[in-house]
Amino acid sequence: MRIKKGIKYYDRRDVIEKYEYSQTTFDKKSKLGLEKYPNQISNPYKGVWYIHPEKLDEIFKPTRKPNRNNKKGIKSWVIQKEWMFIGCMYPRRSTMKENIKKIDEVFDRMKSIIIGTDIELYFTVEPNKSEEKRQYSERHYHTHFLLNVSKEPHQLNIVKKIKEILKDYSDSRPFFERYKPFWEFEGKRYTVKEILSTSSYSNYLTFKTKSKHHV
Image 1 (tube, rainbow, N blue to C red):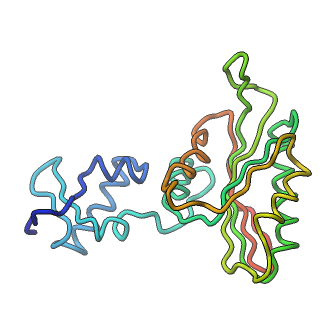
Image 2 (cartoon, one colour; image 1 turned 90 degrees about the vertical axis):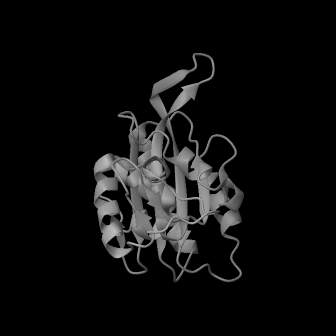
């Protein structure tokens, strides 16, 4: 592989930080990349990598939705995936189980207004943080979520409709907006910031027009 001037190549550390990968996952994907694109990825000697930016996502981007128990895999999948909407539900003094039940109900109500399209929702339930004590509560929780639809129905203001639904489950003014390009990874990273914590819970819900699946 010939290294060209003016191109910002990625190295091993860049990839691990960008995709939240372990060294083992990087090793597996980079090996396949070397075999498939010998002119776009190079490992001239141990510890040094040159990965062409045009092939970065093709080689390293997660391709399948991870098992729910694979929290690091889910985190990487969520961050790299393109999402259409982002939201937060802040119910009054609700436990983790109550939050899970509420987001299930919100999802069911979404299905009733977003007709004729597949729906995909990822959520994380995490403990509230006390402003006074500046520490996490062990009893009260809130929910961050990301939403995709395969086809946005005409003449339906999804943001307005879902905000109306969230009002029934939120103690404060509900947050739900279209995901903005200038947020890049930050909104998604914020949604999964507590995923590795033992005090949080995450899951994804999908609806394929005829059935609902908890994975």
